[in-house]
Image (cartoon, rainbow, N blue to C red; front, side, top):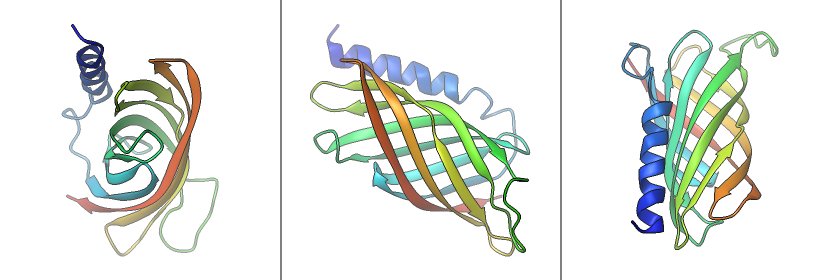
Length: 154
């Protein structure tokens, strides 16, 4: 089995594990865009009052302009920043990524971010950084992040 096939199988396995609660909940789903590293489509699925699954299917400019996928489990704290309208949670989590470059990359990261959830519209905007560790093909530190917006569906 080639290295890339092993990487794709490992990534698919990780994505299945990361989405374990996805079908057990009936919470709103948000879909939008993220601009930064990577740049692409961002999705978020709330699994509880303060927890969510987050992911992106995107294009990585840091990795030779390659296809990029990440999935994260996030914990939100709504009581740290008080706003007069809407909600502004700080959040953190853990997740993994897969980059389909010439030498595929598999890694883990710790997303840290802030979001603003509008009171009168089904939108959120977010700013996030993701310090991480690439595990394959070599172990090295990595940093990514971006700014984005998502529209939520019932």
